Image 1 (cartoon, rainbow, N blue to C red):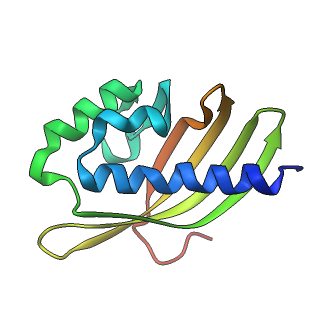
Image 2: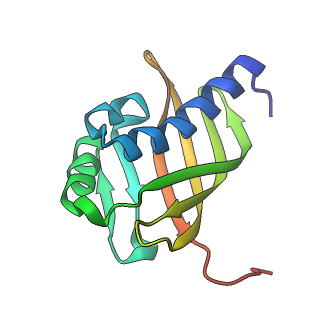
Image 3: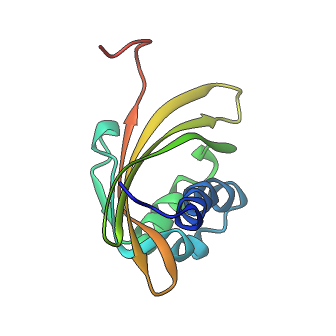
Length: 133
């Protein structure tokens, strides 16, 4: 896998930006993180697959106060690269208003676009057990 340091930093920035935009309610800026036709897989949460960042923003607005108050991304690891496509995984921690927390794993496919790196596909997997051998 050969990804330049500049690309690695840009990819980490775009992955991290999702949490900041979500927490600020800046869903209209999801185009800075996701491709127009992103496939956002929430099947592990019985929420199906959301197609497109506009639909993803609508879902976030619909959740309203049920949205987490904090989205935190850690442990970003690039797992593969081929041309202008990179795969990555990262840990997500969400904090809810009542003080509970949840942990997820983001499995991302990012594409280099004319506007920069964007997440084209994201699968969100909840962490429900301490170990997954």
